[in-house]
Image 1 (cartoon, one colour):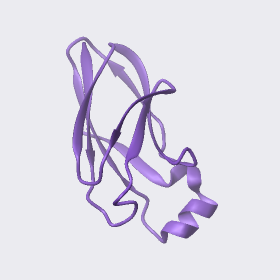
Image 2: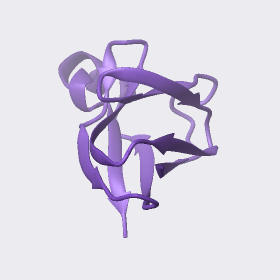
Image 3: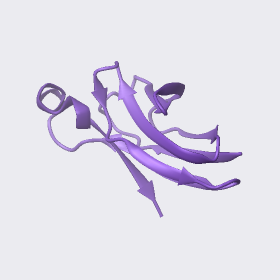
Image 4: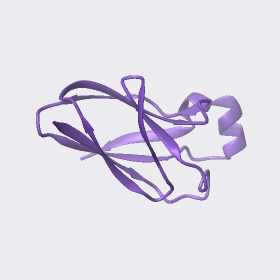
Length: 100
């Protein structure tokens, strides 16, 4: 088994809302503001995305996971004014990045 650990930044934007984590188009859980969660995944190609209200999403991240490998990802909000980001750039409202 492989895994990903997601660290959600503690931010005011959407602070009372959970953000859904999707892997390969399937919901695997949700993460609260300031929370760190670990999810077990099958080894191989995995596409990870975060979604808020099925409208606002993050950039997708593709990971090729080896058996026993754990990757750490950081989840945060895009900088700027939230309402403008929601209206004009909902597909990049959230930012998901791989930490090294």
